[in-house]
Length: 612
Ligand code: M6R
Image (cartoon, helix red, strand yellow):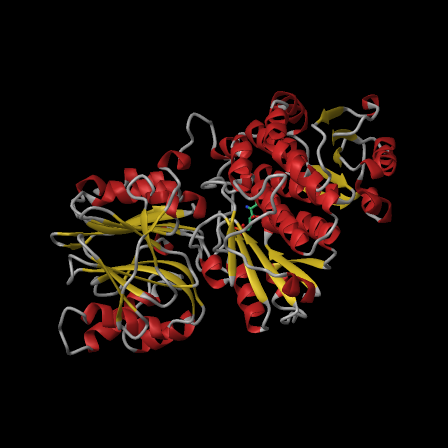
């Protein structure tokens, strides 16, 4: 949450900063601002609203500074307002700071600083940072070139909570300092210029070479170099990582919205994620993993922990792991898991799924499992993300950058990767080889079947035109289709703001059916041949009570019963969620478009949730 960008080089900083913020807007979009070092000191331009508002601020075109910091905000402390926007300065206007995260002890620090003569102009937690840096700076009698860094280090020593911080100082016009704790931040290395960003895609058009800063490390950026220091300010060294994503992958490339582009990228994302993991005659391999039969036989439980859509991918994973590997698997929401004292020990394998790899709740749950002695395995889409650096093992989806807040290609890539992981476990454990081989064959055919499913887009768009004015929409499914119902419902409410619930179809008559009234839309997913009759009966129950029905199915059922049936290709039941979610993603997308909403940046949401 909140996006931060920084630039130091020989070009005018302000257009680069604003351009970077626009690309990072999916991290937050209630206010934005920039600060540069000009000949006469620090500039500060900020306002409530979208990043593009910055272009209209008086004086923005006159900025000529070649070093600057910038921020797009997702409000935590203090409502969206100009005074709460970042950057924030200290009272003497010596330091300018942008911050992503939450300073938990800001009340205490604010009181301390107030007693020491400082005044506060915002309701934010962030404003304590520049003032605290100033407090230590003016106390330091050693005016050498590290005075600025020492002040930042001392201030950070007082902070509790999470932060990624960029800071510039008018007395040091040729450097920028950054540091982080439990909040993402990457440094992009250019030729005689360097960049900062919360996420890689924002600066991908400038460089593909990145330094990944560790927790509690500091970096000083000059135009020519980046130097690193540990928490005690001992110099350290770091190599750059080259990221394979190309800059076009972070552009819309002719699509109206990132979400639509990402829905259509799913066949490629799945192909790339399957990669060279297996073919029908060889065993599934993960270079990054070295699990043995002894270890896998010794574990008595797998936990899959994640948030939102990633958690829904985990639910699909539970089905395949339990059936293929015969290991009990529990799925939990990360923010609940860590507070319920889970029974985790060395006989538990804990798997964490996160597209961004930066979700605070998921990272905290991972740390807890490590403390409790279990092995931890991260599944992420972002190489070098925090979660992958914390986990014992990491494997990657190859979905490319996902920019739209609503996750689509990341979800289907997570589902395929966890399915392949289950095959890897099952082969080591020498489980039912026929079942494994059939699944492998079906996986190879999947990308083509997604392409076929995408061809249904027009029909779904037509149905969306009939449904976009609804107040409530219900989603039903049984078995693995129930996990798809949950994901379909989340997608819809997230980008259309229509109230939506999903239920296991058999649960309806235990309460929720009371909500079904004339003309309400009920979407059902029906792909499990063993459950056709039961599912059709449940759909009949809502039709009898006046519901309009949309059915997504790969079964041969009587279509006359329903208002609309979307026939998707048949596939292995383990991976059917990858096909059945596609019409639901399109359904949510077209409803949002019909309503004239901002599909990629739905209200109140941010792409990666880096606060707990
Ligand atoms: O980056 P992560 O996969 O950890 O994000 C988890 C959730 O915040 C995310 O899936 C969220 O639910 C999506 N916006 C749903 O579309």
